[in-house]
Length: 234
Ligand SMILES: [Zn+2]
Image 1: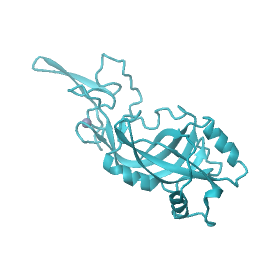
Image 2: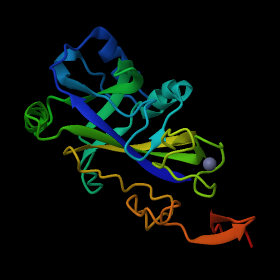
Image 3: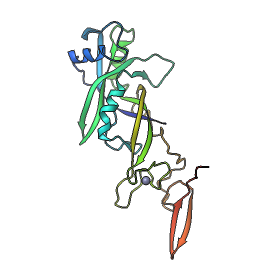
């Protein structure tokens, strides 16, 4: 199981709370024990990752996006991934939206006006203090965009160019769960969630086309080849 973060900008225009929002909140898995009304909540939304290649060189299959949106329902939102604090908001509803010729998961989230720090959170979001929502999810297989194998063990490297000059990426396949989400500052989640075991990834290393992997050079029929060393299962 691989854990990964996905994050995206908060969409800060104050949105009207619809009857549909209220219905969605009150019919979440583990709904509020006291049903809420439009007067009780603040609602904002965010745009999480979609079927465009993200900063980790990962990409969701378009057909998996509805499943991802379903898995997000009811997930708690913390601030800055502080697990010692209680969740301040919860995801609900939302839809898939078009953005720059791709589809993105755009869930909504709500928090309670009656909470003592509700206005602090509203001001922090609307004022841009918190500018992104980030969610942890778990999936089984990073499938290589070139060969379809697990990209941790195949010969291709995410972010490098394939023979046709296309950037190599991987699919988030077999998505298993969405865990907590957090409100974060933009850039607070650098692309470190998933290293593919390439601890020594150096894109500028032009000597070695298979960056960072232990490699072996061998000569065959007058040509040199560089091959990655991949440990066999014992
Ligand atoms: Zn591959």
